[in-house]
Image (cartoon, rainbow, N blue to C red; front, top):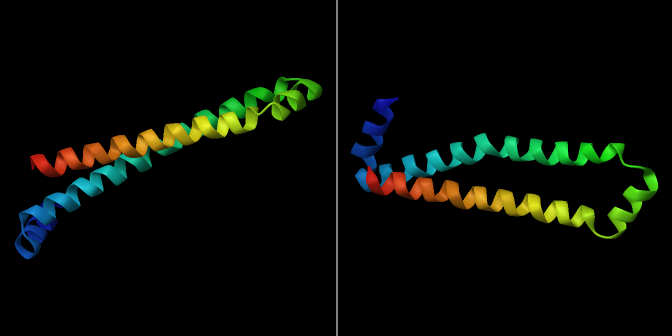
Amino acid sequence: MPWLGALLASLLGTAVSRLLVGAGLGVVTFASITPIVLSALNSAASAMAGVGGAALQIALMSGLGEALSAIGSAMLTRLAIESAKIAITKSSRS
């Protein structure tokens, strides 16, 4: 794959090729860690299966579902921001 970087550098210039390499690194980072976060959220939801029906209904009425959704969204948002930082850092150092 080094030939691809050389081809992009010759066709588009080094700044654009650095930007594309950094963006690719950010996408790969985000795509590789997202299943781990989703797995953690799924295991948290399945851990509640052992709770009694009445207790689970009260917890859901008090907003536990929305809280888990907000936590998951915050984790994925932070992951996206961190992978973008990696992409920007990689593209500026190359």
